[in-house]
Amino acid sequence: MSDERLRVDVTDEIRWDPKIDGRAIAVSVDDGIVTLRGTVGSYFEKREAKKAAERIWGVKWVDADHLDVRFLENFVQDDVDLRGSVLQALMLDSLVPSTIDVKVKDGVVTLTGTAEWQFQREEAETTAGKVTGVTEVDDHVDLLNPAPKADDVEHSIEKAFKRSAKVDAKGISVTTDYGTVKLAGTVTSWAEHDDALAAAWAAPGVTKVEDLLQVDY
Image 1 (cartoon, rainbow, N blue to C red):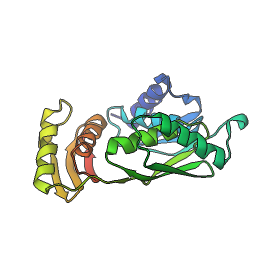
Image 2 (spheres, one colour):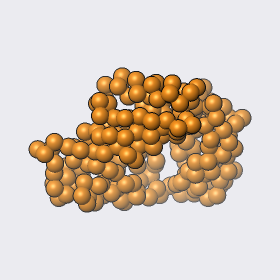
Image 3 (tube, helix red, strand yellow):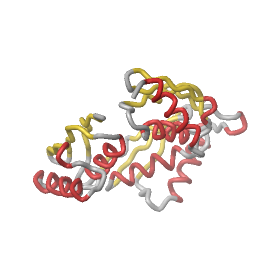
């Protein structure tokens, strides 16, 4: 697929998604690598724009770092109030453990503390990113799962790949070192890439996933 065709498809997908106001987002493509520039009204929109671009067949990588988050003046909170708003949002989310804390500086939220599972850490990041006034979320939450035997982790992840309708287990190699999992090989779409990572994170005892997967169309 040509870069111009990709640019049109990514632009259409962003504008199609009702969660995103894509009128101020410009899309450029160079050899399958998509760059998003412009402004969005929330950090949540920035994340969703990146996800929308990754859904398009032929996209190799998405750079959303050039998307600026800008708020109307009456929606801006100082750091103290913003921290309180984020803590309140996390407290109301039953999937987020109380062991996660929040720091805020100039609208950038840093999540600290501990969690037992990756999905709890991801939920905290998603929830914090939806709070009005947040411009970025840095996740420094540590996972405390005990490290199981390496063979047990590899076996459980490989079984999860085989159960998945979206993941081709033959194209992915899994190696482990204590709680760290390394995924290497090729996948045929970003959807397969994301599902492979999710399966790896779901294995008991995993505290880190090194993503060396290549998307090869």
